[in-house]
Image (cartoon, rainbow, N blue to C red; front, top):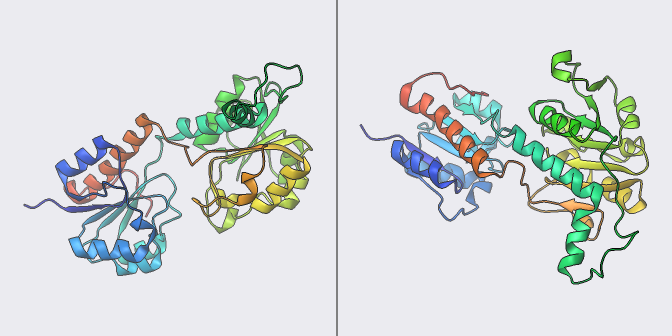
Length: 325
């Protein structure tokens, strides 16, 4: 029997592409051309090759129009990500297309990125690195680039899921006090001493640093706005490695300029890869290019998880282990 055709929208790690090519008639994207940001192009290519499955990624335009235009041959969409807000789930369900994701393999790496940003913001690491590269460093000085320590600070974690809890575990090693805001209070064995807040006023007023780990979508769009920033202590830090859409850029930029927010560390952006130009002129913001899960180990694990789900639907006819729709 011929192998099922698998349309792969992005360049993936070599080991994952090798496995995909072994088990499927894999149509790869070796140059990582960005055609998947156009839903019509995804649908056109799927029609052209008679795809049985699509292995996509965050940022792919798997919207209503795209899914409605997919050929009948498409049985499953696997996203190379935990988040699936780039996929119109309702449209997929209406077409009977299974949607799967890659949870439980990237939490530690993403928490590492959040912690990196927290340290960069607190210790002005980006400013120092730029100073050295520009040949402007004149030697050690008692008041040069004074930052703040993380020791003893109250870390507020917005969204106490897997990533948030991994970050909390790291922060305890820095003798930080953990606070969290989530839909509901978690059991004590999960909290591990973290302090729950059932309303945002007490949460925002208590913390020195906020690290954001909420999903995308309209519910959290521009959650961190001028009103909520005003409730934070003067000199607080903001870290976002979750979803760019959850921060209102102009409000954060204004707070960084005024000093109400001491510094920020961002790995995700509203409308990325575009970055609000207001950030680019500020020294007190560390900017990373969406590195959250970017380790060799994690990206291989994500790819294997995606293929395990695809195998279940297309090769063995069994229930995929990580179905979201």
